Length: 89
Image (cartoon, rainbow, N blue to C red; front, side, top):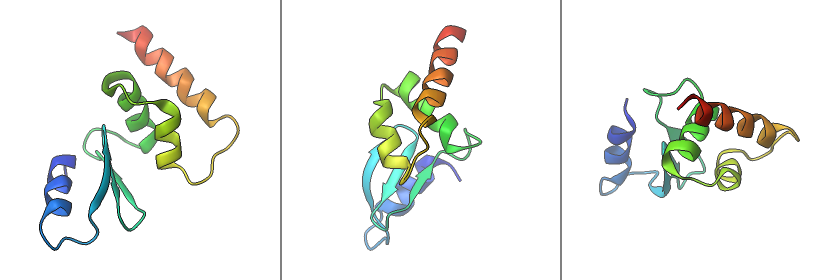
């Protein structure tokens, strides 16, 4: 199911949960869950990298929204993928 169809689903009157925050490639819902564009990305890390490179999102903000806990090298790993994507353009 595309992200657009999820937006429509969670935006309907009476929908539970509802969207409380929307970012490039992601919806964050009022029940604490999130949805990313499963049709375009294999995992949320790919969606984060694309959101930063192509959507102008802030990496630290995206990490704090997506992850409850992180490992010390997560930011460095994502930054490496971001730089690789930028170089391939």
